[in-house]
Amino acid sequence: MAAPPPELRLGARRRPAIIEGMADLYEPYEKLIPIEVLGKRFEVPENNILLRQLQFVAPDVGTGGYCWNAECRYCEIKYEVEGRTMTGLACRVKAMPNFKVTKLAPELKYNISEALRNAPPVEPDKA
Ligand code: FES
Image (cartoon, rainbow, N blue to C red; front, side, top):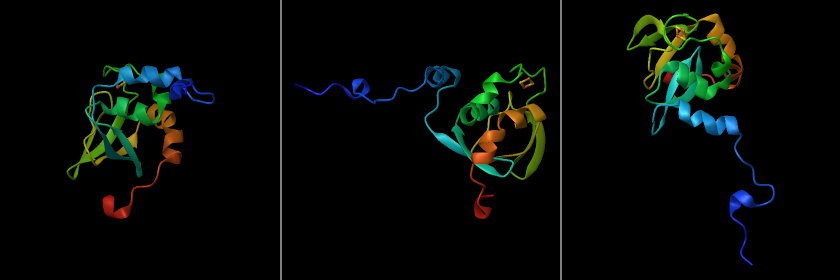
């Protein structure tokens, strides 16, 4: 008798439905890119707005009070790109590799607080 496929074996784990459904939220991407948020390092899907990228590492972002269309400003950030400091909205900015977020609006900081606690710090030579 042949063994059942892996997904039907006793003890096999299914991914929670909420995780499976989240795949539809993202723009197509082929790889994760490194970004820095308040001194912590994250790997997020390329080709997505920063708010969605942060939702990738902190699903609580999906339950926040965000408008997702540049009206509420709950996603306001300060960030550095190529040595320049700028302000912007995480629902409008796409992070590129080595994008550095230096300040987050309180709502966003709250929603990613657990991910921030658990993420590794950026190594000094990669800062
Ligand atoms: S989510 Fe409302 S302004 Fe960005």
